[in-house]
Each structure stands twice: as structure tokens, then as C-alpha cells.
Image (cartoon, rainbow, N blue to C red; front, side, top):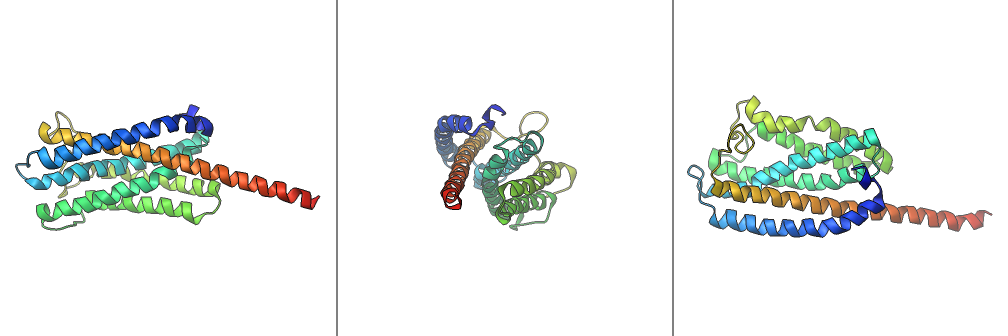
Length: 246
């Protein structure tokens, strides 16, 4: 982590890693979607509605994983003054928001045939909606404060404080009575899903993860270049003004 604090070293590594992560994401997405939507058998209870899970579950996982990444990067910024930590957290925020939105929409589409309604105010759905608003608040702070350093400080505090909601989302189905089904993958003992459905689901989780890595690296590279151009513009302007002042 500390070796990548140098922007030039990070750009060198990310230049190689980004296309590999993007290519892996494309292959896994193709395999996972074709397998899950065309070849996976219907669930004995949910029927073909289970196919929504191949998009919904990875989206929900990545929404929580992206916020965890943001909170970790923000913590690194506070403790170790990592030069790229704020950039990493800022790069992840819109992606996490997108995964969160996709999970909410696909969850509603699944809920209508299963529960007879698109939305219920139970613990899992409500806490996941709160996560969505934390994402919006984080992005809004960056846009509202002009000074990047101050914006990064304020947004980092929100990311760290808001992380308390992530375990609430994860364990809400265990702590409270909810309509949402309990954990089926990460649980004591074997996963409660048949391998014909579990395998494409895990492939989609891997695909979303690779996609997240590729997009974060691309956004970080873009932000670094923007800041470098901004510093160069300021330096050029100062050099231009210096002779006039002399």
C-alpha cells in the first residue's frame, strides 16, 4: 500500500493492471450472465425469478465492499497521510453508488413477485437505503467544497462514520425479523444454494469485483492527471506573472 503512495509508481502499475482487470471482468460477466440467465435451473421456490439474483446479489455485495474500501482509504488518509487515499476513496464512491442503486432496483423487481410489493420498510432494505444516502452525501461533500484538501477531510470523516451502517446491513437479517431472506452464502456450514446456481452467482461476484477494480484504477488515473494538469497550469500562470511583477 505504501509503495503505491507515489503517484508515478501507481500510474506505472495501474497502466498494466487496468486492462487485465477490465478484460477479466468482461469474460466473467459474459460467462456468468449466459450461465445464470440461460442455463441455470429455476429455483424450486422462486422459479425463474431467481435469475434476478445473479445481478442483485453481486450488486449488493459490491455496494458494501465499495463503501468498506472508501472507509479504509479514508482511514489511511487520516492515519498515514497516504497521498492517494482520498483519490482512491473518491474514485470508488460513484461506482459504489451505482452498485447500490442497481441492487435496490433489482431487489424491488424481485420483491414484487415474491412479496407482492416492491418495497417494505424492514431492517435490511431500510439500512441499505441509508447506505445509498451515505454515498450521495459523500459525493456531495466533494462537490460542495472547492479546496480538495478540505473536501477530502470532510468526506473522509463521513465515510468513516458511515461505515457503521455496513455491518448493520450485513447482519440485519440475523438481528431482526425481516422479510428479506437470511444469509445463504456466508454462513456456518455449507452454502444453502445448489452448485448449479451457486457457481454462476460466484462468477458474477468475481466479475463485479474485477469490474470495480478496473474502473477504480481508471478513475484514479484520471484524477491524478487532472491534478497534475491543474498544478502545471498554476505553475505556468505564476511563471507568466513573475516577469510582469518584476
